[in-house]
Length: 99
Length: 462
Image (cartoon, rainbow over all chains, first blue to last red; front, side, top):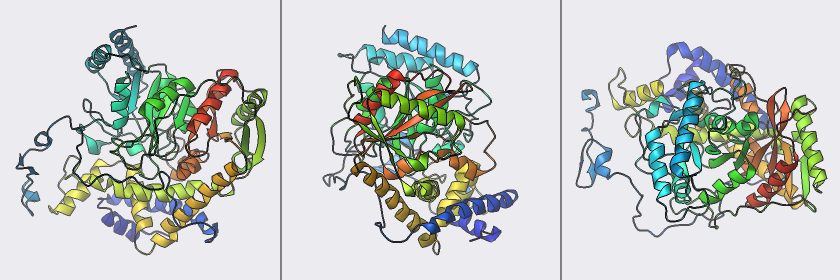
């Protein structure tokens, strides 16, 4: 499977990543090398093992459904320029260009 | 010695390491060290890590110092909370000495991908210390601190431990809380430890292990015990997976392994050959699973939730995201985000991600079978070569990924493993890796302690 320039531009858009025009040839080359390399997984038979493996506890321990506290060193109001009534105040929708 | 005196000496060693151009630290100050020392001296009980200065990889958050993850995108970020591991180490009497340089967002095997410059190998400045926790490894190897925290996603502590000639221990997944470790690959990430000795590393691991309500993937188990020193290894069966001893193994590494096998036999252990046939697929599996998880985890660095905001030419919110991320992330992180997004995208998910998950299950099954077959531990080289030269692998990402060929299968399987120094090849350290069944960390540490006692790690291998 070969990755072309347009594929990189498409994936960069999905990833919300501005990629410089000058970097495109290098990225096309390196992504192709990586994809060619991982293609060796085609040799792995599709049968014989479960579909998903996750390490860790067999069952994730659930907490009681009550708000917990994270030991914050500073109150939430100190984390953002504006905070009121338990909410962080952010610019009005569509107003990013004013920043 | 009082904590204040230890802090003063640690500050002098940190300053000397910085002046020597190691580039292993990102943040530290004598004032912070003195504050840590004053806190330790005021503790009613000294604690098991009394006044031990510990360096932290800069993806483990503390409230006093910035956390950069070796990236420009976190410029100015200071966490409002401490990582659980840090809180527990402090409660045990340890002092947080410095934040250590690292590959950006822990992506790399050489610590050449930090936005703040590469870390030098403490024995040879033209070589790399390994990565991604290269700053932490270099600080322990240079004798600046007796222990340091790193993080592992696919071998990022064991590999630099091997390159730098120190002990590097990755615990079983879930034994140490990830709360406060900046997420890279959440199903793989483990806070891990470097130590001058197995005992130093075991004591640090013990102090920070155990269930944490703030990380629901931690195991509901009591903290790890510090294993007692074993007089010998009589009755222990150690498997040698044939796939990890290829004919073209670097001669110095091969000689280091022969020395380790001889030491194990001398201690009374029985060595048997085993097979892990799917380990040959570990690196390609890892380089699908880890970038996929990273692409999701790093979506939060968008100039709104995190990151100094950049406004793109279109002036809308997506332009903000794209410009912030395009300018803030370095080339390796961008490359992995692109790979991760590609393998998760419609049309490619089954061909890559699903296949990698299936292979991950087969890799883990191989280990289960080997241990069920009667071996207590596995022994392999940690790395295929000693530390390589800076710049040698940066142009070709795949050749860099292959530096992790002996370590990343274990991360995929969530098992505990460690690297101990077993000799030098032309002056460069060589490491051996011990791997244990899930949650048998203590067994592995006890055996490593015995090997450490009889192997001449500072001597050339022949």
